[in-house]
Image 1 (tube, one colour):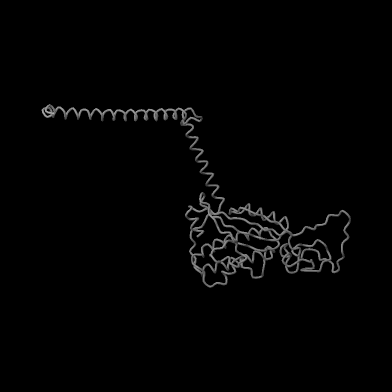
Image 2 (cartoon, helix red, strand yellow):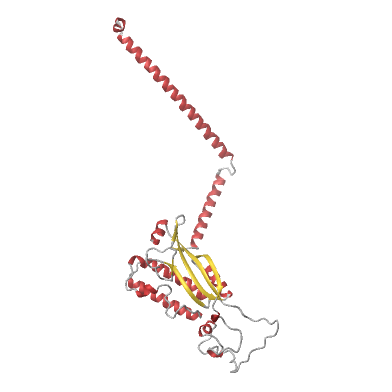
Length: 327
């Protein structure tokens, strides 16, 4: 103990040196581990680089230029594809008076178009699914924009049907806008509008039912195909229709307009006015039942009742705009 007291500085220095040696050993071990890890990462990166360099095509200037050209082609394709879909309108600034005027003008236009095309409507005062809105004096301000969008969709659907000269419109159904709109209303679908979060699209479901022959059905499908809006036909149901809407090929029926035995609506369809076709030869007053020879073809096509469930896809500028339009 006396020696330690006499050589206290030497002992302290020896202890400090020992501590430094231990710390150096620990630091050296950690540095070796870090060096090993760095070497392994470097070797992994070298292998990855070698794989990339060996791939075909090689990322040279020519291939980079080809990749940029391909990217431009894809961007052009996306732009052209979006042009085939209807764009979701921004908020429509309407008040009750302007919406009422828009609603009445649209219904009046559709009634005149149906009359010119010889299409029979479900009722004399058909409201095209907006009967409740015509009766109400005040509508919620938040629902005027969605109502206007669906009114435009109904108008576009009717344009396709009337242009195809279907025989009669049985019903139209659209999605509800207000929370209680579908209660007890046969014109409202239970299915709600939906959104596609990837494309930022709004999907409106509709259902149309009408009577026609096969040729008019083909014209309706062709009209949907050529329409500017994007229609996705989900279901097509074909049933036997009402025989009263068909044209009878047999002579000797009770005379109708112009003595031609046609319903007024059907007469207007084929260009016959109130007094029939003035340029057609007049049929004699007494008609006799024609004699049908064996194996002679007779036109006897039955009318069809068609029910089509479809969706209208509208693209928004963003997903948020599509979600806001549904609310």
